[in-house]
Amino acid sequence: SLPEDFTLEYEPGDSVGLIVPNSPHSVQFVLSMLQQNHGILPSQKISVDAGHPITVEEAIRSTVDLCCTMKRKRLLLLSMYASDPEEENALRLLSSSNNVK
Image 1 (cartoon, rainbow, N blue to C red):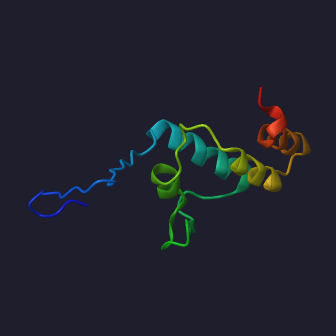
Image 2: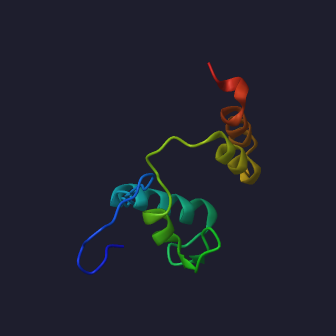
């Protein structure tokens, strides 16, 4: 956060990051899919990165980038939780280095 007087002191190697929330439409789509397919309610509390508990809705809105390409490691992790064998295989294929052209 910025100091009260909005002054900043920069040093070589400093960086600035912006956290932009996901679009309301994208958030609602993901929340709807989580509730319909897994019974996860938007108001359910979860802990992200061992932080204080927040709602699933807040996590999807502000902590998950829905617009970036997923890394192979995350696709492999998701494959471990897939209940549908076809989805599991597809996620494993997408996570493999053999999939790179």
